Length: 262
Length: 327
Image 1 (spheres, rainbow over the protein chains, first blue to last red):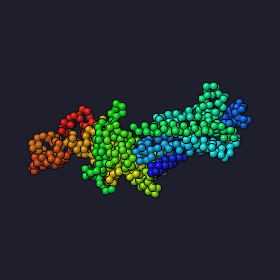
Image 2 (image 1 turned 60 degrees about the horizontal axis):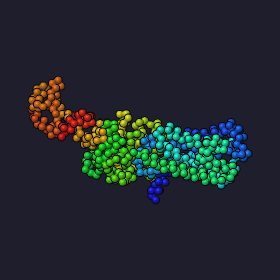
Image 3 (image 1 turned 90 degrees about the vertical axis):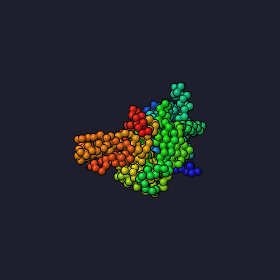
Image 4 (image 1 turned 90 degrees about the horizontal axis):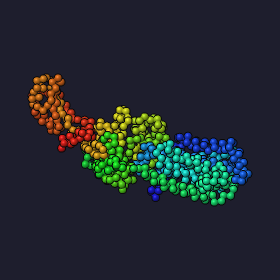
């Protein structure tokens, strides 16, 4: 019990430190809002017309913005990965990590701080981006319960990507490497999911990948919930993927953190 | 805690650190080989050695950062392996590279330490305020360390270590890269800590620093402890200790040179240099042989400084020579 209370106390301290970092150095947070917002504007006002017309069946007659925004929200969560990995890598490169390791504090507190900080940031950035989406014409059909499930999926996805980013930050040797290692999460996987266009419209090899990779059920469930379409088993699939990614990444991060002391 | 600036008086007291046969290798590169240390509570113990001698590795092992490949060690009575948590609770570490949070202000850094050490809020603020004052950081308290000078960063670093009231402090090259003035400030801070009864394990590559601060010194070279003792003991281990006698006139110098035939004379300066390898004992002999009739204007005793010791002990060519002479 005492150990648990200490772990909670130390983790809270580390979360506070992480949030203070974000406030002190808000550029990263701003960037992880700006990138999805720019993409949103780009797709709504410039590229979206022909794409929307080509969607046909998938859009069910709704404007493209309603198809697009769930994808942009997923991308917003993914955009926080770089922030987390860089933060972890910076901590590991500087003397402060040795100080923490020689103090009688809960071992996992530092990583928990990074993860929780990342999830909180993701909730803030997705809320901001949702606000921008509403301004440019996004009209969700979700009820209160739908919104709660949306928030749950956002949090679960953010948690999974946060542990993955922490692990990447631990195994990369430089800040640039840490950032680079998250680029597939930030861009490749969102574009190769059904975030912007349905998987059916893609070339056959890529179509299979898109249909089966974890980002697709996440965006599909967000889209179904927000547009009032039937959800199917996408929510379970999405949460299952999130749990799997979080668990594997957590074990990876824990091993990498222990290996760091040699 | 009782005040004591004289760690030597406490030798034979309780041990702060006992290390036996510490060994550490990275692949084929043996960094530490069979290192034994016994540091008493309340003393300043210096690990002296060139870069790559194994000083930082020793500190990392003893502060629970990395495990040793072989050997055992206890810190403040707690076994390093079995009771790492208990060890961490009584030590403070200020590493070679400043361990401050660059995005937090000086004050926030101290408060963060206080929180992690589970110091109650009111006491936390009190301690932080006192440390900021003591380490001359009051004006810089609300700025981030990025704006600090090297000396200020080190002071903040040590202040953070002191938030927990550690009983044993590891200072890994605390003055490397500091200007002379900051170095002297740091020395004074270290002396103050000792006066409060804290045990200090200091690593340094500066001989003067070890000489100034340490009660006992272990000279580390290529992962081996090649010599250990008080600064005075170490200095006596290399040849070159002598007495310098100065006389008012050539007649007195002549008389003295006749009495002390082993001396070397300098007629221009009216000096006689007499070897004095056995310290006070041989000094008595020299004075006795001079008798009462030869007027000595000035007498000074010269011991080799730690530079001589260092080069003699760590230089491969001369090391054997020194060992033979001291046996």
